[in-house]
Structure formats: structure tokens, C-alpha cells
Image (cartoon, rainbow, N blue to C red; front, side):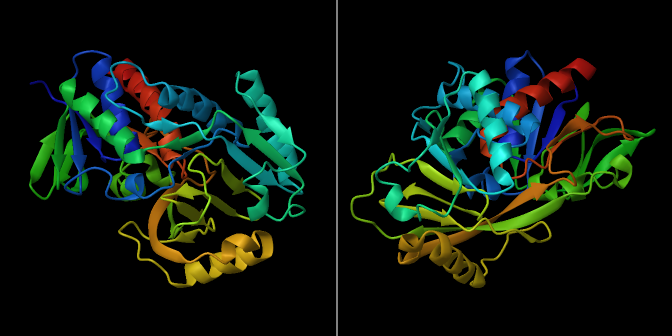
Length: 354
């Protein structure tokens, strides 16, 4: 086999890119994942919401493109029942409202329905204080993805196309010869490749430390998710609700609610511990803005790391100073939603340069 394209990271960005690469033609691909299996970190610890009403226009464009394919997957993506069309409701006040209205305009121009609501619909209104926001937008085409089914679908599709997956392999450094990336170094020895794709999530800054001349300053940030016990009368297809201004979201999950206070604490790459104070912070926020939710009992909680660049935009590009290294990082919590489009764009850029 000729030298492969090495993808560092078996999360959504990495496996989606691998699938797009192999479906574009016979190209050897190796996925390296530090954990034994895919989805042990943030790719398996998120809320799974497919949200397309995003104030950042460049991110929104990718989200709209990707969401359409996740809702209606191509025949060669081996997934079943991966998306539930529940709709979403985005709330905002003050300075956030103009950006949301601009995002709504872009969504409509792309063929997605967006309705600015005068009142919240039945089933949602009782959970949110009616006068605690200035604008509400219903996005009927948004919904919730089965994150495990989608991630495994990308991986199964990549493997069926000839890609190789190696779990339990931690990359310790880049293999650089004559000023070009020629592969990676691992605890088990070097692995040579035609190019290296840095899709290592929270570890992307460490993996790419020899490249970019320090220009890609990445910040992993912890976010907690909390799941309540069963709540009588909750329909599983109730729209998710996300208040951009006050910083919280919730959606139905397992007969109750999945809740987040949208907390962001910068931490080093790793398995983030749960901070007991996060639940208290969420409760205070809900008491002020959605008091009915604050009365619910949290049964389980967990945390994951979302990785951001300095400007908050995803990095999908070749390293500016080190040839052979492609960055696919800093998806900023949009990893699930952007996965299809980000993988497709990354694969196209990589194949065009090789």
C-alpha cells in the first residue's frame, strides 16, 4: 500500500473526513485515535442538536449544507434513523436580536423555513418566562441527531471504503523531514504518510504544536450537560429551546429534559472532570429565566470539551508554514452539525493538493 493519509482523531471531524476521502476514490487512509474506540470524548458527550440559525454567516453556511445531508443521508452512508425533525426555538434579546434576524434571512434564502414567533407554542411556553426575551425564532427543519449512530455511520462507511482504524494510538509528535510533515510519531513508533490531518479535537493544539508558527492558538472549554428524571407529559419531539442571550438550552431526553447552562471553562486537553458547582450555576440561571425547569431533579451529569480558535471560527486549511499538515479543528461545539460539510470540504482540499 502506498503511504496513507493519516487522520489524527476519531471524532466527528476525523471520521467524516475519512469517509469523504475514500468515497472520492481509491486513496489509502488511516485513522488514529488515542482512545480504544471512537466517540469517547466530546463527539460522544454532546447534546446532538442540529441547529442552523447561527449568527456567524460562514459557520451557518456550513451548518445548513451539512444539516440537509444529515436529515437525508446519501445511500452510501450506512446510517438508519439518525435524525429526528423536532424543530428548534432560538431566543434572544438586546444586541443578539439583529444577528439572529440576519441569520433567519440567510436561512430563508437557503430554502429553510424560519418563523419569528409572537408567542411560544404550547408545550414550550410553560417552561420559559414569556417576557424574558425580545425575539423568538422557530426553525422547523432543525432537530436532534443520534450522535452515536451518525459517528458509527461515518466510521463504517470509511472502513467499507478501505480506510483503516487504529484505536489506542496516541500521537506524540509530527514526523518532519526536509521541512515537510511525513507522518507522525507514536508511542509504538513512527507512521509515515502522504499528509497528516489534525482532527484531534481538544488535543489539536498539542498535535500541531510544531506547525503554524504558533498562529493557531486553540482553547478547549468545558461544558456540562445535565439530565433530569422523567417529566410527565413531555413529548419526545418537543422543539429544543436555546436562549442565546441568557445562555442556556434544553430539549427532551429519555422522558425528561437534557439541560445546559452553556458554561465555558478553559481547561487543558483531557477527560474533563464534572464540577459540582456547575449544577448550582445552572439552577441560578434557570430560576431567573425558566423557573419551572429549576424545580426538576437532575439525575445524571457529564462534561465535554469544545475547542475554539482565537476568532471563534473553524480551522479548515493547510498549515501556513509546515507543508503536509492539514488542520481540521476548532469546530467550537458545532462538530455534529458541521460534520458532513466539514469532512467534505477537508477531503476536497486534501485531494486537490496531493
